[in-house]
Structure formats: structure tokens, C-alpha cells
Image 1 (tube, rainbow, N blue to C red):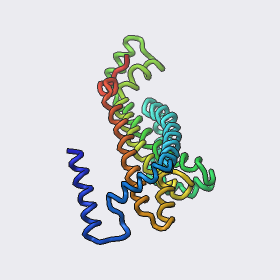
Image 2: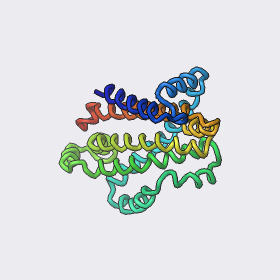
Image 3: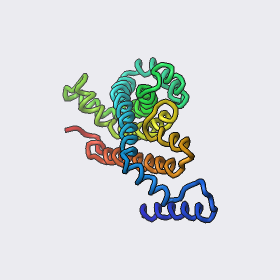
Image 4: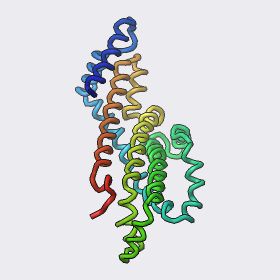
Length: 244
């Protein structure tokens, strides 16, 4: 069924281009040839690697900060009351709105898109972690304390496993947003990556076959990243909320 859905979409695309008679927008064949030409010269791999490097760096920094902060805010009511207003005021600001400030602070280079990716993925993860920790059933915590499990061991052995399903959901949402943002950031603040490839192809004589080729690769890679996170959601320890 998924292959049939993709085939129908490609068929509609081909029919729209063929019967409209457009000479600007490319059809599926032109896009496949564009992907092949980019792949042969190593250009496509270069841009994909650049985008993935920025995403993994910014996303990794966000994971390292968002999950511990979310646990602290979800576990300590005082920390939550202190920091939650700041989180909720900054969270609605679009990552794209930070682009001018990112360029001002970090210049045109890898640091700017990494900063934007960090911001975009940080908030979904911290909110998901807070919600997961706050939703842990009290009887689990009381039972652990009855067996002498307290302090950091209580967090590591009971709270984190019980909250892991919602934490992973926040991570999945954060990764999807990070992949969206890196493309936008590369269009204005960098000279490599799939976002830059789209703008460069448009400026290089309106090569819309390469523009759509880059868009297709963005979709395929995004699908792959989401599939990895969905497999993580199906791990038994995550689904059943336990730790060995």
C-alpha cells in the first residue's frame, strides 16, 4: 500500500506536468536524472553529509541539555515554577525568527545553523520530558522508596524508565523539527547542505530539476530519520517502561 500511494503521487505529478505543457517545472524523469547527475559528481553526498553533520551536532547538544533539565523541572516543583515561564515564553518563537540574531552572534558558518537546530529541537524535548516525569505514577515511586531506593538511583531506576516513552516522543518531534530548520538555515546562512543546494540550483539558471531533486532527498532522509525514531519507540524497555 505505501508503494502504491507513492506510485499514485508520482503519476499525478507526471500527468500535471505533461498535460499542463509547462517548460519550467520538471517531471519525475527530469528529477531522477538530476539526482543521478548530482550523485555522479559527489555533490549530492557532500551536501547531505553537511546537513546531517549540523543536525546531529545541534540535536545532540539539545538532547544533552533538554533531558536533564526536563527531569529536574518535572521532579522538583520549585524548579518547574522558576523556569517554566521562561521556557513557555521562548518556545513559541519560530526558529526562523532567530536567523538574523544567529548570524549576528555566530556569523556565516556552521555555528549559526547548529544554534538554530539546537533551539528548534530543545523545546519539544524539554516539554516532553517534563510531561513524562510529572506523569509517573506515584505508586511506583512509593514502592521504590519502601525498598530503600532514593536520590539519583530513584531517578535512574524508576522515574526515567517510566517517563521514557514520552521522552522518546519529544525526541522524535525535536528531530523532525531540526531537519526542517537546517534546510531553512542553510538557505541564508551557509554555503553547503541541501538547503543551500536548493537556492544555488535556482540561481544557477533556474535548474528546477535540481531544486526538486534536493527536495526529494530532504523528504527521503527525513522519512529515514523518523523511521529510526519509530523503531526506538518500539524497544521493549521504552514501551513497557522498565530498566534491567
